[in-house]
Image (cartoon, rainbow, N blue to C red; front, side, top):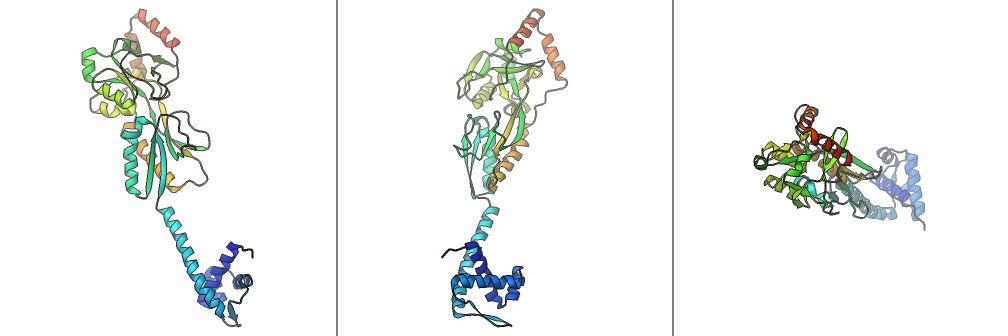
Amino acid sequence: MSTNWPTQLRGISTFIRSAEVRSFSKAARELGITPQAVSSQVKQLEEWAGVSLFHRTTRRISLTEEGAVFYERCRTGIEAIDDGVRSLRNAADELSGTVRVSVPYYISRTYILPVLSEFLSRHPRVTVEMVAQNEYPDFVGQGIDIAVMSRHLPRDSFIARKIASVKLILCASPGYLSRHGSPKTPEDLRRHHCVTLRHPTTGKLLPWSFQRGKKIVAVDAPGTLTVNDTDTQRQAVLNGVGIGQLASFFVYPHVKQGRLKTLLMGYVAPPIDIYLCMENRTKIPKRVTALFDFVYHELSTHEDFKPLPTGPREENIRAAAVAEVPNQNRANAESHARVTRVKPPKSF
């Protein structure tokens, strides 16, 4: 016997309501359908079951013996189905399940971890798996729901919201500057101690980027100390080992506290945008969208991601800095800038 379960479940629900109110008309009013529709659904159910479920008169209905047994059994089943639907709706309202988040190493510990901790305290039924990596996340292969990315945004089928625009800032500790002085141009860095960064995946030494007019120029800073992670680079600069070029959000709190001084702000290269991304699926679980919105809000409003104050008239600052270069060196510097026109580095 073939079974059209949606139709039969609708008929069973109508049958139970009719049995409880002992009237097709009353059941129709409560269900929002016509008495004829109620009668038709019950009749189809009787034909499907092969028994009569009601005794019918012109004024009232009553259950047959088979109908009474069927009612008791079906009532329990319908109540269980209602409970199941309520549980699904409650689960949808109360966030639960696992969210996989991919984040670069450089912000995983200092910025992402506190945000995730706060989110988890608000939603105890949610679990988060954080994948810290500098590589481009494999959304499908790694099962990534949300990713923080700075370059090479995914295809159009992704939702991407800009968290912040980050600049690479040259800085040093007051102690270092008191011993060695401050550079006036990027070329002066060759006479200073520098803390440089080697890409943790490719192993390439990352050049320092500056802007000269409309060009982005790169300087191969002499590495007194070379490291392969930005946390160590920042700590070395704080310890007075040398000058470093760091992401502005790494610099911001230490500049405010007077532990670092910014340098060559008139040469700062254009910013690098950081995005929060997730797949644009038809049905995105609420736990994913809730975490996405929470992370976006917390990071985009974070004090450290605000633009660093650069002072008035940067163009005047740049012009003054260039003017301090001796005439014979200025031509060499400009020539060097033309030769080393490059794109900004792919990561901090």
